[in-house]
Length: 303
Image (cartoon, rainbow, N blue to C red):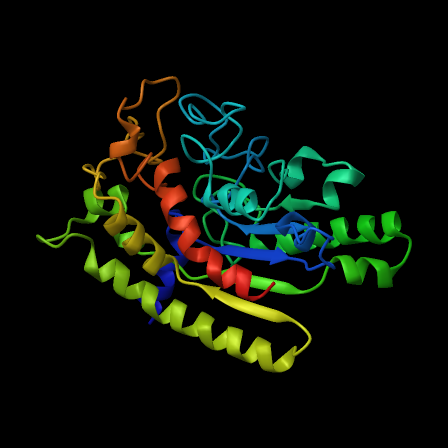
């Protein structure tokens, strides 16, 4: 057990730490989805970071080309060629704009819609993922959310109004099969298997524990709703649905042998629709587009 803990604590790879907090409001006359989901808050790591690491003292930031090559605003700090799964879920829920990162100091209008607190290399533990430098661990992300909530209370005029706006509906994601990332496959080897089995075996106890925690939260907080996002299932189904992922274990861009991130200002692969992974850890936008809809039913059930 000690070796399992030490690996997960020291691993700088994305662990799919993803918490979605959405709120439910009275539906509009036309029953539009946008009216039913007025705000969307995101907590997590590099799979969902949209720019919170840009000004941190860390090597785990990607506000440079070729990141964002397929994103409307270019390199923003998203660890992909385009949209993240969080972006795609937001679009599907009806949000007109991308949820701004906390580090961008969103204004009062923006925070009523949502804030993204995710930070590359962040973990649940304060010490997790610090090899590359600073990050915003989950505890700090939650403290940042308290700052946002205080602003919302002030904006709406009362705690009661803020509580009604910030109805408690939470979706938590399990860890994905990180043993299938190009980085782990290249550095550890698979002994002929598709992925690094020993690493994926470390993931299972965490996900089992998370499901148990969600059950406890449901019992302890009957006025809230909680859902489990099975990222392993989403990844498998997305890969099966889209057989055109001809390249599944090699990144689309040229990566650093130290960080596994794309080398700055290099030219990535041209056939990005054929690649499952953008860099040594993170999926391409197409992979996100295929995986995110598989997670959506869980989110929609708690709305």
